[in-house]
Length: 88
Image 1 (tube, rainbow, N blue to C red):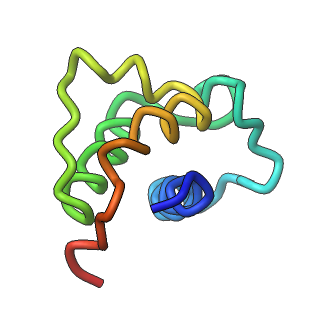
Image 2 (tube, one colour):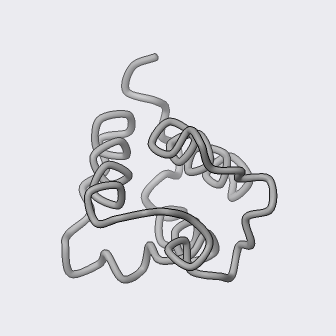
């Protein structure tokens, strides 16, 4: 997957988790929690969706890497090379 494809995966997940949020103005370098109504359960939902859709395991110690879009995409990029969605 490319960086752009990974970003779209994250946007799709965020859209499902927070359907009332306007993601069109999301800034890649600003923490998600400063831009959206995301609580810790929403954050865990993102992690669980990545595990369910792509079989990616993210250790709790690495959660700090997922605070911004840039950080999330950079963190996931090496893990998502050659990956396809687990199921549609």
